[in-house]
Length: 326
Image 1: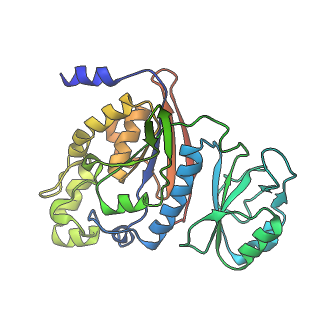
Image 2 (image 1 turned 180 degrees about the vertical axis):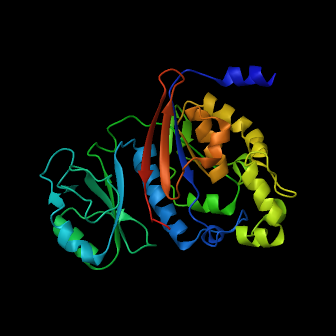
Image 3 (image 1 turned 90 degrees about the vertical axis):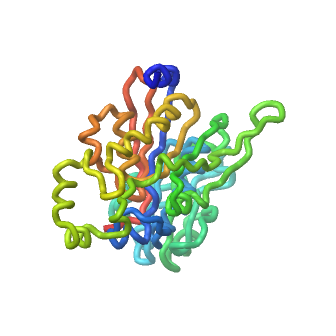
């Protein structure tokens, strides 16, 4: 019956899934396992950047997106990397465009010549605002302290018809805090029906692997208390179960319903959850054997866009938003 139910939910149309780990939490900064702590300061910064990504890429369907953090010392280089765009129907009175090679001042290679400067954040924890419409104003803003710039491609925000998108999070505090700045515009579907864009849905199935007696401990603390447990975990990553906790096989079992939902929904889905959960969902879509999933690289403060239709393979795009953490 489980196989029949799964086959009923598999459809050969295009699916798009966006994977994002929660922003770094207070526990993760201290290298503690599990828990239900709030976001750290870098995690809060990421939540603001992820909201901009969701608006421009998931909602407005821009293909190119770049997030760049600059210091006051970057103004000399920046003057050579921005130009004022001439008036056009797209720029609507002038915009600032990226120009040239940004590698001297940015660790990201996502900024391309011709991308439009859309949003600007003054400081590290203030809300984003619409970017100035001339280069001198941007230079002035960067010269006054740390600034984060958001660039997109030149397509107009309303150029494409609206796409209804879903947002899934785990039920843990750090996941919900990661998406708290998302916009949820109301889109009229037909008649009196409406769609609340990226309305958050919480699923306990997406929660972090439960570490049982070891919740909130570091690996060094576990090694001091029970050195044999660390060896057992290393020997069998999939089958090892934390005392009174979960194994990765248990995590796989509780993701069965989520996989069926992903297969059945036609709307794009953004999933904001935790590393073990995202590794297995990503491995399923990419057809990666489950014994390789525990070693997959899904970095913090990044988004992975995966598009698949069951026939022509899988397309993947990665977006690094920052802030970077060691």
